[in-house]
Length: 486
Ligand code: NDP
View 1 (spheres, helix red, strand yellow):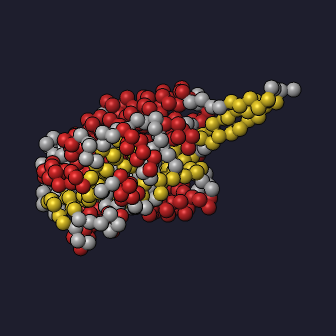
View 2 (cartoon, rainbow, N blue to C red):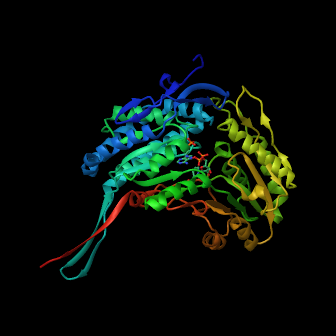
View 3 (spheres, rainbow, N blue to C red):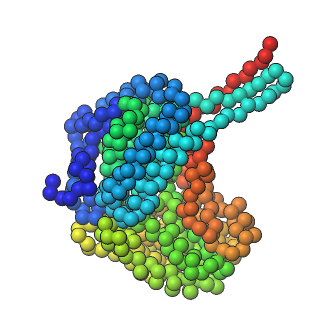
């Protein structure tokens, strides 16, 4: 391997089971590709049923001791882990950027910083968890125990690799469960490095197990195993449906965070300059590969032309380039397959009568998977380009004439994850917040996250909520205890 690697160990991504690194039982491997160069830089364990069984065995064996530790001890373990992540923040950011294609400064300031916060947030939240007590009548008390479930499966996607991985495992572990986690095979590197930090932090063997390889091979044996009590999944809606089909007949708890096709509603009374800049950020951050990105921008007709001009100028100024260059605002798309999928939507948008305002093409740079940020107008809100999740740097602009029409357009897809509204009219902001069918409505901001809030989607964007107490409730079973004094 002659290519530069941020850390030598990421050339071979092994499974982490029972506190140790293992090759896959089958000794089968898949290639790991660097998006910014298209080069194979290493290999990933292609795990299958045998590895899944080994990991569940380890997690099951560790559950009793881990779940019986006082919350303060579990918290100490997680805080020690967070400290090591902070020590290695720069290295983790380099690995994330290298493996995913995102700009290094984004990996540093968003992904890894937030991953550390995820761990610290739940490590301390668990210290403040309390349960309800109901006095039914004098001498009769009902109280609620919240007990960990057992072994839980956490399956995460490639777009915010360590960020979403830790967002799941932190509440699961804090609540006293043991975990079998599966990061995306497309971006396994930070989860692999993280598993080595778990050993260094002294997390007891078997408490966290990380399996690498194709979701198709790992998913079924993991979800079907009766010892796995809950599945927390973030990924595409089609995958979510197949996971639900496996988990539901087995009566497992499920949290599904799925796709989005988010609307951005821009009213004439918005703070114009700020709105242009923030909506461009909302559209193209992480190459448009965030489930929260606003890819359908509806603009009040009276400012449509002015907004369009300013927005397109802003987008043309975005710099697509080498992720390690601090001047790059947009890095590489995560894989060639995904790049081709995104480009196929550019073709579709043209076929559907869209007018290309900027972008639309692959950029040839170092053999990597780069693409111009792309803006269309003239596409009906109900056409396929505006209904299907593209999950890349492609957005559409469309005018609206009234609040009612803006709400209709925003709500007209099968998804309902995160919308943003840009207006200085507080009454309108409140009215729209209640009418928009989305799990999150941002008013005059985007991706401003408070980890205590419920996070999740409506409609085909998911089932359940993550974050804060919702996450700790998901990863625990509520047990009612009724005591009558004699
Ligand atoms: P996928 O649904 O393809 O994959 C997500 C994860 O599921 C990966 O780890 C994948 O493994 C695994 N997987 C695939 N098939 C199965 C299976 N049959 N059983 C179990 N696991 C399986 O999504 P992407 O990774 O492509 O991520 C992009 C999607 O995620 C977008 O739709 C995006 O909107 C959504 N997303 C949603 C968020 C939310 O909070 N609502 C946040 C971020 C992303 P492998 O990669 O190895 O195939």
